[in-house]
Image 1 (cartoon, rainbow, N blue to C red):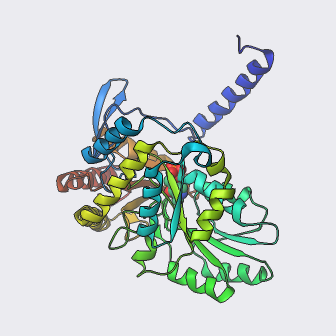
Image 2: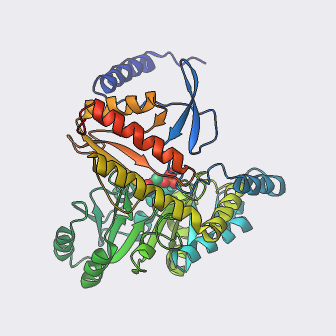
Image 3: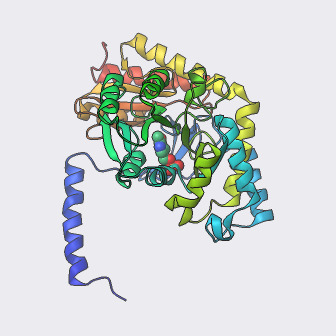
Length: 405
Ligand SMILES: *Cc1c(COP(=O)(O)O)cnc(C)c1O
């Protein structure tokens, strides 16, 4: 079989030209293969050979991605339960481990039940269409994750997008849509480009004034925020949330899987109607087993969150003192604001020369002129790692004139 039809040749030529444009405009995303597990230090293959880098860009907040206990739990499940279900959940794909994990996720988030998806992207892709029709309205923060944006596109509800964290604008949009049958406000618990924690008490208050439901995507908060690691609502002293989506791909081990937690009827309904649940293969039992182990560790080892918080506070304080401007607050995502996109790229390159892995983000991912190096702390890092990172940032900042020499 050949793929060299004239049609595919002309598609290839068009795509190659567009890829060149991405490269020329600095929008091309290069990938750097790791040859080590994901951890506080990683080994990356480079043209000159393998390189050990101090890693400041993983969502591995609790350092569980290479935890031997999670790996052992997954191996054990592979031995006892095999590789996968080869079925969607409702045919013959529901494993006892899925139900146990769902119950644990419900308990963690303070909800009645939970439903697993292959990813949080799929959870968000499935929920809006299942719940909302043309007589309903959905209100989404402008900085919400792409999966929420796409999920909303798939539903027929009236759509409102309010500027990031703008409660007055949300209030106005809810007023405008007052005749809608269901009103659903959806926000990220933590905005990942800014490291900002959503003001859930204020959002809840405006929801209550308008009889609106509140959904929070806690992908960057589960295992991280709140005294018990249960997320943004717990961080805000237990403000009520009607439904929560989240991922197993970040703090909870970093493998894969997503979920929605909510009322018993909500979850039961999603099992009937959410298309990524109905038409995509069930999560491998080994991943359910490792996530269950991760949830034990979240509960049993609060010192991981304490170390994470301590690293974040120390890194923030040192860089602020050195003269950097940082975005966000109170979360291990710490964006170091650079401004100019080219300078941000040079900054990341200097860090890389110093053995530090951190990524520069510029437009269109963030607003033009607000380029930044987004760092993410991890409890897998040592105090000495944080010191080394601080030294490297200060050196690069001085050399590039980002901070006073
Ligand atoms: C990472 C992330 C997702 C996607 O999670 P996956 O499980 O990797 O699909 C969804 N929402 C938010 C807010 C995220 O940060």
